[in-house]
Image (cartoon, rainbow, N blue to C red; front, top):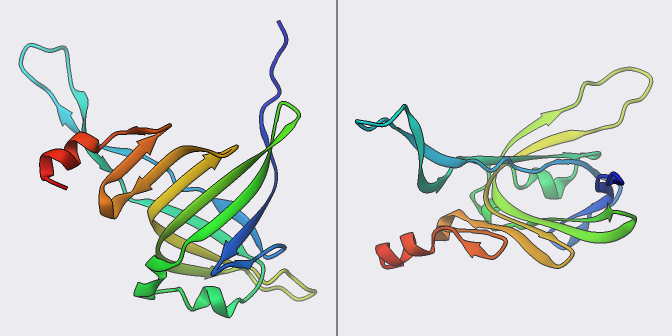
Length: 171
């Protein structure tokens, strides 16, 4: 039985306000997605179980930019930063075939952190933290994840996890 070579992200490019950040946005941490649960320990069962409550925990993403970009700094602490979609397009090697991978996210640009300065020349990097409210992951043209917290939408592979909840709430 032959083993399978894992997929590899070959390269990516980031876009903000329709401007390419090629060579500048060099690192991205995609948000961790965790369903919100409560502990349930009912009579007559063997122990505590987790129960889904149809919500997601807070999500955050980090992007490192090799520049002191005015366009990015303008987003820090700005309420309007929620309206800016940050798009990252990548090339994913899957078994020797290149497929597209796209991440779209928007939210509140909450934090910035500068790198350490040292004599002799260092890259001028700035790390930004985004509190993600909208997130979409697309692989090879297929939507894998779609999260729109403000509209209570949570889709995984086309299955809407919160459809019945929205219907019950009259949304």
